Image (cartoon, rainbow, N blue to C red; front, side):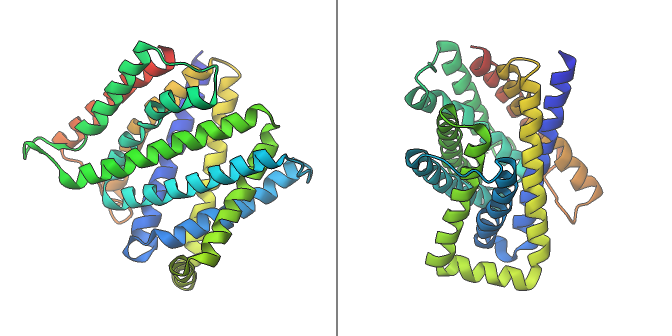
Length: 309
């Protein structure tokens, strides 16, 4: 049992690293936190390269039904919008706070999953878990010293609520398509449609196109390189979670990875703030850290209720 748990912890830290790379990209590599160029990179370039990789994996067999392609095209559109909201959120606040809010994803999955996956249902314990996680997300916006909820963080919470709802829909819809198709082919067409969404944005939205060209002239190699590193890390994270799932229950894998991630983000954020403040600097006062740890612990309890309830 200890081996799959250690693998899940490693996956959580890899996922946490991608969160901090995203924060660095939006705050340090593009001017005025302009997310538009990053959206083009994350769709056309990252999607295109991942398409080539999975084309080799699938031996260039692109056979797929039209209904599945349409569902994945819709899914890639949802993912792209969620990515826009994600970049907006991490440009506004510490990535540690935003990731705690991201734990709302399993809460939305509770309600969306039964609509697309008939075998799924909701229990009272799972609903309780959802309420606990939601309370933790709201708690992280409270400022004890000022004795009030921080307006800026409440706006961030609203953005992350939308992001979480979209991410939950994206995850479940892809899982639904996966039920009737080969896993690798689903991933292949996920990346093809993501690349297509990026091309449509590039052609139809002048501001995105101009931001992308401006980024290429000023810092293109760095942004593209970091984005591709993120894609590789995300793929490796998925492989580790899948491998861990072969040795123990999927619920335990999901619980461990999602539950550890906020703590992993906090640890990495604290180390970066202390050792490399030029890369990233978070609020690391004792009261703030205590509040974040408590909120993350509440999320862990809520996740346990959802996964095992």
